[in-house]
Image 1 (tube, one colour):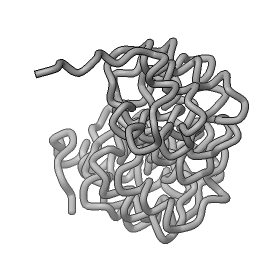
Image 2: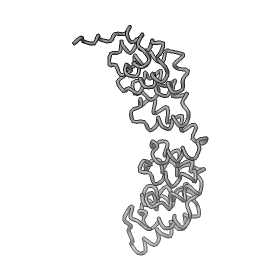
Image 3: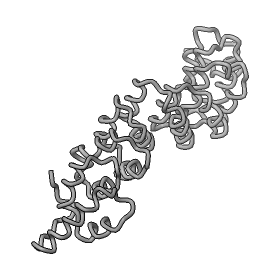
Image 4: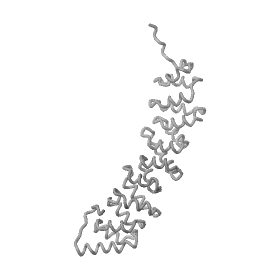
Length: 267
């Protein structure tokens, strides 16, 4: 039986159209380079090729150097999402992605970390302009930094989802509560949230925030340590309307000797 001749770059350059979908899976890079010069090689074939995870950075850079191919948004996106894309090439491509693809890039575990970080930055810049559906997608599974930004923005359609997310951390909540212009709606949602309202450091931050509903603030006082109550009673960051209540709590403890357990629940 006659053996099949081994494929070479020149054969790839002259391969008929029906063979190209098979040739894009060829493991030898020199054959792929020949295939890229085939006049029948089209954008669809290139996107199929870019779906391979084993392409080298050099080959991806070669593809990116072709102006005709880079006029295609599909090709740009496929390159930007490839984990082996050279960083300088990828950084330029990410800036050209549409908002929905930036969101997808920020989720992608296989993307280059630097590109994923830039994608997050661009999402943060465009966050106010994103449609509600994309914000909800981010609220459900977005990166932690974007979660923090969504909390601070406080869109009514996503606020509860963000607060319920396991990706939102204590640092983001405290950073949000430290903002002077944070809306009453956001502060109230945090103060009434089953998880966040039980965290001691969040309770302290809520006591310092002038937007915290008075009833919630008063419910926290019995479970704040005496040392922290003394600090709060002398702090300029605590709303003046709350100071008399803090001092009254301190006086009651001196009279009755009550010592709260730090972080215990008062709900």
